[in-house]
View 1 (spheres, rainbow, N blue to C red):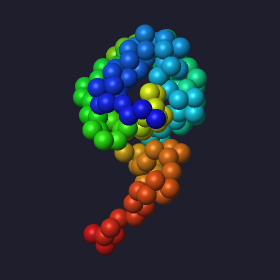
View 2: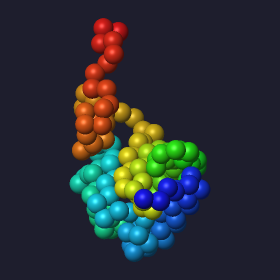
View 3: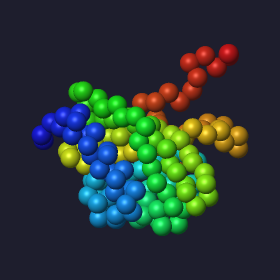
View 4: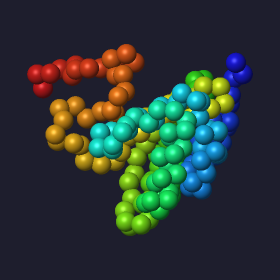
Length: 151
């Protein structure tokens, strides 16, 4: 496997956002591995989105239905791992609203393999632990309890 540079991944993320803003299904599919997964916090129906075609279809729907457009606010790309972190704003133009958030990207070769989205929004008080729906926290080695539950 060829090692990609941080500049390569930065350009891939920007190409992905350009495809989102254009509502370009094929350009979106071309940014992802066929088995890509896009994780989201609770609150959206039918999450996580699995597969390049599903991810592309959902973003095209957002553009066509919500008037969605996105801006990248910041990008940080690892110098030694196929990973990146970004901050973005999702402009929902038809409702005059916006959502800010961040995403963690994992790459496989020259495509996006996984995105984990985190929103700058209030926590869902109906759940004990606010986390991404369908994401394997235990399997990925994340903490499952507080280091000091007595505090």
